[in-house]
Image 1 (cartoon, rainbow, N blue to C red):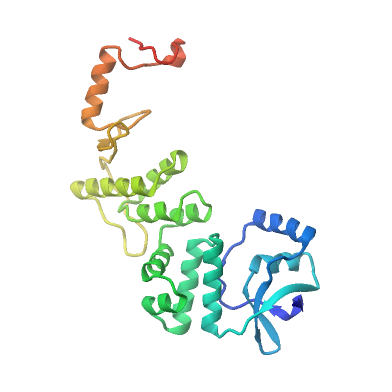
Image 2 (spheres, one colour):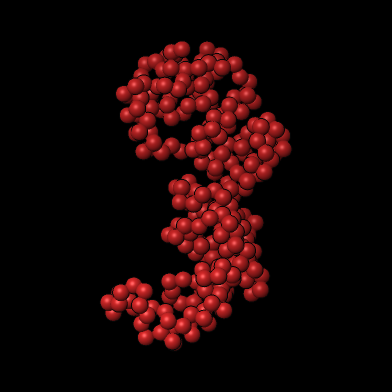
Length: 272
């Protein structure tokens, strides 16, 4: 059915805290051309209608000053309305996990729910709720990387377990520039924390911040054999001690290439 846009109001508890301008522009072009295909979901509250799902479509309709919008009216209690929000955004898979965590916090505060109760109401796993609640307290640099889609939530979750802020920032930069899988991110976290433990490094602070370490020798994955290795100076690869010795011997015998670009040597030929 069509409904006057002015009769729709936004809910107090919004799941989506930010909306991509580029995404809105693309949606606006589509709505200008063919209108709203998927209805905005609302529920009647008194004489007005409260938005349940379809915030971006509503914002575009508001920007275009559309007098009427295509809606679907559902009968929903407060609890069911919150469940619809979660279900729709899970299907779309474009909701920011950090925003979702903030949304979960507000729901728990509003209704006095524990994590398990919230998970039951929303029909998600308790670990799903717990992970997103934890993400709200990650260091800002990590939260921003997830919001900007520079890191996946799975990778960021591994980095959140690194117990030294400086090392976290370092591997974030490395992951953004070179890419990393959750499995590799987990290995980096384990290796760094193991070295911190050996060197007496400090754990993360209770408020979500982290102590910065001094003189910590960081162990990372060897890019030759996959085992633990040490970062050594300026490099093209990371190597463990065994592989490094093999490379050094090879360099002495002229097996490995050096300065190919400077010396104009065709790829594959060794340089003494």
